[in-house]
Amino acid sequence: MAKRKHNRSRDKILQRKAGVKPGSLFIPFEAFAPRFFLMSFSEDFFEELEVKTYPELVQRVTSRPDARHWIDIRGYRDEKMLEQLAVDFNLHPLQMEDVVNDYQRPKVEQFDKNRLFIISRMLRWSTENKTLEDVQLSLFTGPNYVLSLQSDYEDCLDPLRERIRVGKGVIRKRPTIYMAYAMMDVVLDYYFPVIADMGDYIEDMEQQVLLQPSRNNLALILDLKSELVKLRRIVWPERDKMTELLRMDEEVIHESLKAYFRDAYDHTIQLIDLIDNHKEMASSLVDLHMSTVSNRMNEIMKVLTIISSIFIPLSFIVGLYGMNFSREDPETGRVLPYNMPELYEPYAYPILVSLMGLLIVSQLIFFYRKGWFRSF
Image 1 (cartoon, rainbow, N blue to C red):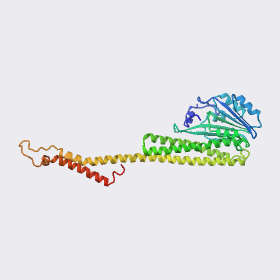
Image 2: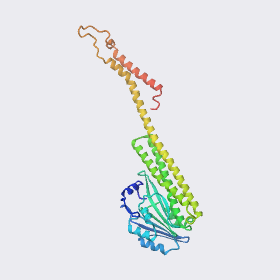
Image 3: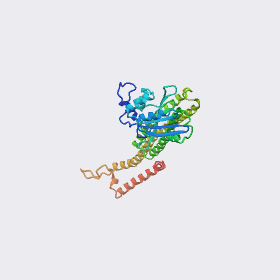
Image 4: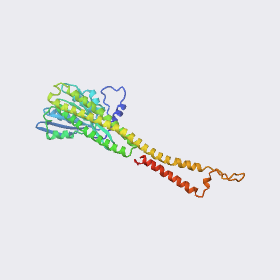
């Protein structure tokens, strides 16, 4: 997938003009030119090609009414093509607006007896930027086709394309709603490695926080929490979407197919549990960071306390004997016996230095026995 951050959705919302008529196509300037891919198949027939123009695409679909078709349109910079697409496939203008304004939450809408409009979001974890990158996948199901539209040329659906090519499984035999399910299932399957990569990143951050806590690490942790919140906002509607699909009439989704949708629903529950677990781990990283910083501050304060404790008595001694009392009376010249007579002893200086050294050693022994040096 092309690199596209999830928070660009907010920018697109802000770019919209107030008062625009509902159903207007607001095509962003960075949209890609459309490319048209077609897979046509049945149990004993398969054809895959990229066509050059939209009219050719429609002609090939209508020429094989007996086959099932995956109409894959990537990029939607051509507004006239989108308008003609809505006419040819009888698509509602509001649904086309949701396709183009691709910041929609995952959802499903039934607009005919056997036709659905489905939105999913394809995700990728950028190991370089440590951000979620997502692309909207819009699906329209019809009697013999699934129409998919996305803004980027790359997606995560190659495993499904390969299954159709080789005829693996029952995808060529099932109705088109099953193919739509298969697309949603592949999208959900790719959420698991995304969450696993985010979990690995959390473990790496834990090591960094323990070894070298910093403001930058704290900022990265908060960014990660923000990405997890965004991920949950995507996965939670996926659960609601699957619930809505399971509630649909048997005419829309046959009971034999609902087991597959229940499995997809279970996947969304697992994903939500994993995300909540990662959110708790990220929150604990913030607590760990604060605790580590506090412990380091305590170690610094301990060192400063030891140094201060050693120099306080030394400073007292130096200050005491630094007082300039005169030995003799300046007027009479008489010796004053009580003005620090020890300063004038022949060994006064070495005795005082030795006393100060002994005091330092005594304090260090005292601190050692109290266990102050065990964490150094």
